[in-house]
Length: 320
Ligand code: TXA
Ligand code: MG
Image (cartoon, rainbow, N blue to C red):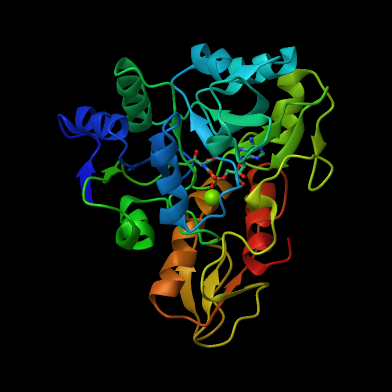
């Protein structure tokens, strides 16, 4: 495995060839880093599962270059889903749609649905474009972390998570810190109305306005399966607690205007909700690097991105 800058001349060509040859390429997106493989290559995709230690029946998101590849992978696309795709792609939104014949069981976890996303990051876009020029249809990529662990938002974090599980010809493309820092909103578009399966930067309000449909937020009413919806996901090794009371030696994450309790190790002091999302995973990760037993998180109030942060926080704690 080698880490190279995604902005270095020749790196995109090299990485797209690696994908075409069945190797894995971790790459930056605006949400978190993904661990990519040719979505039509069964062997390559199976290596994603072994590198992550992820159960084989959990579906992967296929990353495409644009709206134009949507109907290669999906059929019977409802009008409201087309609206969402037009309004929010490229961007931090994954649509779950009825799959076409191109989407095999090895990428959908045996489900009749497929998750699709057009990422909004220059390196990701160039990679997928170049891969499509080589005859590729899409890049299957989960977050580039071990199963159940915190998603990586930097190339260093990918190396820390997966370095031991990648092979010589695999690559990590470094594209800097992921700007959003939390995984995409996932929207189930297989029903007559959109259902939010995982909250993210595209909020329920935005989905409702764009689609013109009343939008449900679900944990459970949909029959699609998503491991991010299980309890105890996105977890660091340290015990995570919600609150403002921390003991000396505990890690502490809170907005910058919240003073640190005495003796705590301050892991992040974001100034606003966007910055909170951007630094959150790295702050949890740095707590583990410092070997902390406990990290206390003062959770953000409010709508929008705060909902996504509280969702991940509860998963990190194992509250579902
Ligand atoms: O922001 C993101 O979505 C990142 C970047 C790399 O694109 N990817 C990501 O992938 O977070 P992953 O696999 O770590 O989380 C995607 C979630 C999983 O819980 C997966 O099971 C669910 O989406 N998912 C994917 N395809 C699905 C499908 N066809 N039906 C239901 N859930 C699906
Ligand atoms: Mg993940």
